[in-house]
Image (cartoon, rainbow, N blue to C red):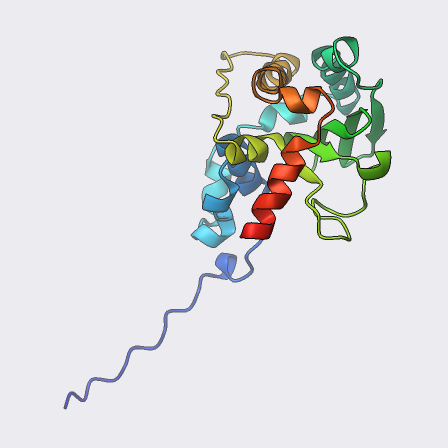
Length: 211
């Protein structure tokens, strides 16, 4: 019988003890469109010192005045009002977030900017009874009512857009390139949403019930 004492378990690094969703992991989730396959950066054992040495791909957001975001968003998504049955956008803005919401009778398209985490996302929202439910993604009845566009693409096995931003692009141009890619994805793959159909949410809720 060996007398070798068992080694004590290795202590977790201090930066990995509290797993949290960082801005970097949120950006990775947004870019890859594979949220179920990604762990938060804190959970991968990446230290704050290492993160400081990595260039932030969303640093351009710090160079763009928050008041300019709604103008670029409205330019790109004007087609929702012009070519489809969506209303003029409702704009809600605070020092931390911006939401530009285009509503039809049954669905809405929302462009959401998180200035704190430096993230821009497009969300698709189901409007039962013509209004947005309270909560985050799941309503009080347990129904899936909101999904981000890249999640909807993943659900339908649609590739997410890849955007090449030329070096030296202005913050406004960078934002426009990403928004135009998402707008084109809506046109190409989500005709049901543009036609004010809630078919996507019936699919999501059916998948949720069978999980």
